[in-house]
Structure formats: C-alpha cells, structure tokens
Amino acid sequence: MTKIKSILLLVFFTTALFTINGCNTMEGLGKDVKKTGNALENSANENKNY
Image 1 (tube, one colour):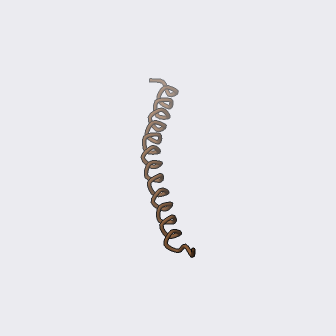
Image 2: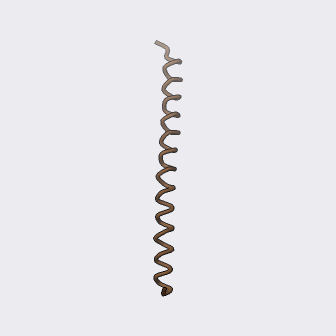
C-alpha cells in the first residue's frame, strides 16, 4: 500500500471509532441532562409558595 492509502485508511477508521463512541457519549449525556432537569423540576414543585 502506498503511504497516502495507509493514511486515508487510518483517518477513516479513527473517524469511525470517534463516531461510534460519540453516539454512546451523547446518549449518556442526554440521560444525565434529563435526570438533572427532573430533579430541578421536583425541587421547584416541592418549594412552591402558593
């Protein structure tokens, strides 16, 4: 293989790896944000003064 083909192959697989990991990371982040929002909403409901 030529040097350029080797570099392109490495870039392709590296990009694919980051894309796959990024999806899992964003899913986990979404769950964390949802839990934080629920906790904030529950706290606000518990401390209403009306």
